[in-house]
Length: 262
Image (cartoon, rainbow, N blue to C red):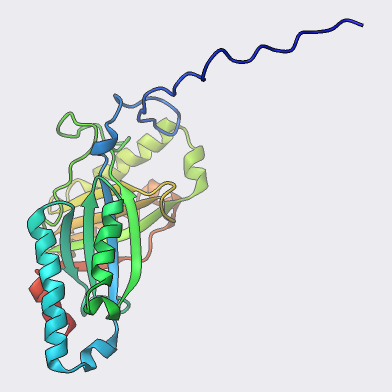
């Protein structure tokens, strides 16, 4: 009976993985190797204030508000992580305010939330919604300023921020890249007349329930309503599975925010 030699053990460790690259859904490389550190993460955190807070004695409420305001103002002054404050009082029934955080490291969101939890007001706050996403170059838009590996955000330019999580249907991903590009060209062209609305699309694949989080920065809610209405007539909208809940957020200072919540 013949004997076959056992296969030789590998001479060394397997080769290291190659550089990280941007790929479109077809697998085509879309750019140079991106720097992981330039990928900005975003968190849109919506908070509900327990009505019991408004029934506390005035001195206790004032002290809690001052503590929370100082926390937010210190984060705003630090410039990193980037923080913006918005009110939804009178605009949404299930939450009172939103904190928009942007950082290169998502653990910064944990640190901020832990600091909020330690405040007196934090004991009366419930996170009604929280969406985490990552900023990256769009595969459908080629005219992006700058030559960096990511898209640098300029958050909070408008008086309003309109936000919603977004999920595409699975048939969308079965389309050819050319078919998707054609639909997105129509989508972009439909939106182009609305100069007063600035769009930001971020990606949540694998890190949250939705696939995208889109936010629209604007001074004009009337124009945003017309924009969204027009986009409903584009072919790409047929491949929308879910684009709710939707939030209208009004830009406000930390002091103004705390006046509104009581």
